[in-house]
Length: 393
Image (tube, rainbow, N blue to C red):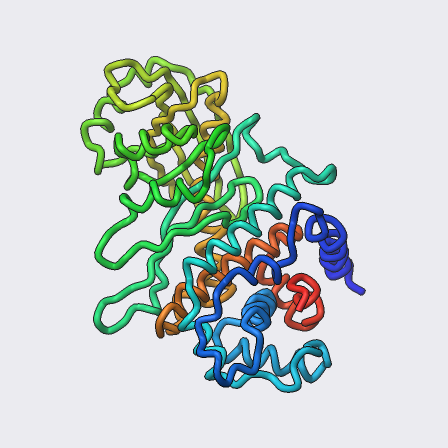
């Protein structure tokens, strides 16, 4: 057996015996049992929760479409891995469930379950908590459109995810309507996260607004915002700070894939002149890249409510980098591993539901300890019993 496969199977077994069997973590079946079956009672042949669990197990194994989910179920049934069913539901059944399910209730159920998994994992003796920033819990919030699901009428599916920096897991989600934007939905997503004590929320420049800072602080949290052209006056005030008189406080150089990347950061106290709610520090971060002699670079400004005793310059730079990681650790994986942006599933709530299941699949693999998600999907595709063990079908 190749050592890499042996490692993956070992991680899977350890997670089953540890995190997924933790006394505070219910089974996924129990978590999903709270969702109301939207189908008419007459003629129902398959338990609603069983169909939902097949969705999750198939996506854990790399299924990219509703047809692929039905094919996964056929294969698992032929291997006698679905004893509760005499036969597999037809493709229309899977389409109907995806289109009718209450996507908000589904998000609530899987988010609550996922947060319990993250808590159990972080409290386990074997968990390496080095990625935590001292006593702080870092959560990145960012939105993504499911591009292939856009209707000819212009209707779209746009979802904001709350992404745990340390574990790489989606812990909450908020749907953004087609006639609005992310800004009014941030407080709603914060409410879903609950008490934000010892939590720092990182968001992109769209949310660098006084009301967003206040919304985070009112719930007990800290914020870290990038400052760009949409907050023109604030950016001007920060850029005019005496950066040139300071020495570099944090530097990091990385060499990989034929390029050299450099990060240099300076943090200063936020004076009253900055005039932004709760601001304690500002930071200038310069990042450069040299690829075969071709150099590029940019300067990024940051404002945060974190005082120096909670986050020094190095930690602020790491928090910023952790936020940027949501693109390649979540959005990019959903696109490349599951083909999200090419998926044209769009009837009813199906696009939202499928995006949520992809988030859940990614989160489960990360909690197990798989670092290469695409490789994990290939392994679970060959061994459907692994996904079934996780979902307990």
